[in-house]
Amino acid sequence: MKPLTLKDVAAKAGVSPKTVSRVINGEAYVRPEVREAVQRVVDALGYRPNAFARELSSSRSFLIGLYFDDPASAYAADLQRGALARCRALSYHLVVEQVTRDRASWLAECEASLRSMRLGGAILTPPLCDWPELLDLFARMAVPVVRISPGDFPERTAAVEMDERSAARELTEALIALGHRDIGFIQGNPEHHAAARRLEGFHAAMAAAGLAVPPERTLQGDFTFRSGLDAGERLLAAMPRPSAIFAANDEMALGVLVAAMRAGIAVPDQLSIAGFDDAALARMAWPPLSTVRQPHVEMAAAAVDLLDGAARSDEAATSHRTRRLPYTLILRESSGPAVAG
Image 1 (cartoon, rainbow, N blue to C red):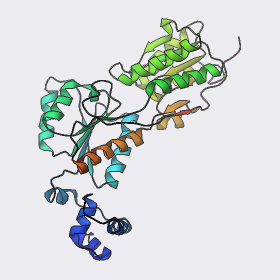
Image 2 (image 1 turned 90 degrees about the horizontal axis):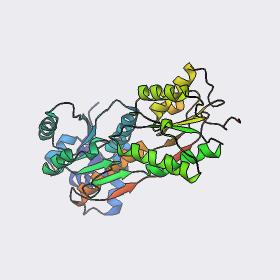
Image 3 (image 1 turned 45 degrees about the vertical axis):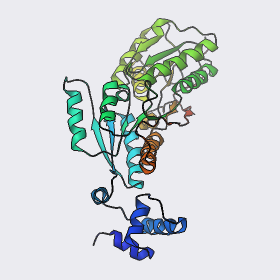
C-alpha cells in the first residue's frame, strides 16, 4: 500500500498542503474551524508525518530524549510507556538513553551522544535529574529539559512531580488504622530524593500517632528486589518481629513477600506488607500489594507536554514551571488488621 502523504491529507480536507503542515506543527494563523477539520482528517486517515522531513522544513526538532540510569526497572518501563504514547500523539520520536557514572568518561560520552542527535528536548529521571554536571551539559547544549521528581535546583528547569511525603504518610496512617503499632520500614536508594521524602512521611505518621520507631526497624535498601528480600529477612528474624513492613517501592515489597513465604509467615494474617508505586508486579503478586499509585505514565506524558508547549511558544529552556500530579492510595490483600496480642 502506498504510504499516506501530506498531499493526501490536504486533498481529503480540501485545504493546501501548507495548511496541513501548519496544523500538524501547531503553528498559528490557522482558523479554529479549519484546524479542527484538518485534525479530523489526520485522525481518520491515521496519518503520521515523517519526523525527518518535518525537521528539514522547520527550525524545530521532533526528537525527545528520555534519560535513565536503569532503563530496565519497572519504574522506567512505566515512564517509557507514558512518554512514547504522548510522543506518538504529538508526532514526536522518542529515544531512550542510559547514563551512569561508573566510568570517568561518562560526561564526555554523554556530550558526544548529544552532539550526534538534534534533540528538541530531554526528560531526566531520578537520580540523574539532580546531577549538576549533567544539568550544566544540557544547558550548554541549549537542550530544553523537564525533570521527573527532582530534589535539587528547582530554579533550573521545569519539572513533573507528586507529593512523595504525603503519600508515604497516608499509607502509614492506613496501616496504623488497621491496628499496627510496630511497623518496619525499608528505605530506597539514597541517591533518589524521593527515598528521603518517603521516609519522612513514614516518620511523620508514626510520630503523629505517638509511635516510636526503633533504629533497628528502619533498614537500608536500594529499590531492588534483592535488597527488599535481604532487609525483609532481617526484619522477620527479629524477636518480636514487626506486625507490618512498609517498603519504599513495590520491588522491595515483593522481596519482603518472598521472605515471609520462605519463613512460613502468612500474609496478611500474620504480617502486613505495603509498597509504593503500583507497578505491574504489585497487581500480579499474591497476595496483591497494598501500595501508593504513583502516576508514572501520566508524569511522563506531562513532561512531553511541557517540552512541546515550550517549543510551540518559544519559551526559554530554563522554564521553571512545575506540574504536580495526584497519587492514589490502594489497599489490597497484602495488608490486614494487626493480630491481637
